[in-house]
Length: 163
Image (cartoon, rainbow, N blue to C red; front, side, top):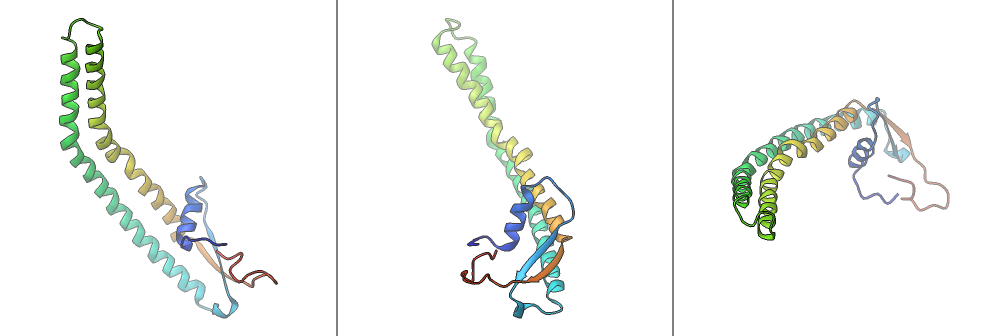
């Protein structure tokens, strides 16, 4: 009802939110005049092609994100090195434990952390979302597609109850 997602995106969202990896049965409601003998087979073929396409897209995006992470190291490593040098320089500041030493030391650790955080996030964690989506797409690829006639309830708007 008033769903602005495509049907496939809605299915992906539903399946990503569940831990179950059991086979999927996809029930599609269509007006009776839209249903013929081959509609379930055509929808199933189309869904498989879409899933295959999107899985390939996810693989390319995973590689692109990792390449971005390696590229980010070109900036991140020097920033981290500057942070480590700043921490080392902070140990020579006198008086030890003073405000200047404390601020310099903390600034150095922040630079060291920030310089590596984004590249490592891009290399290790960002690709995981594409992998999770690909798992769901594999479930949808093998889904049993069933087409059921849909008749709106009497007195209800034609779009109510449809997804």
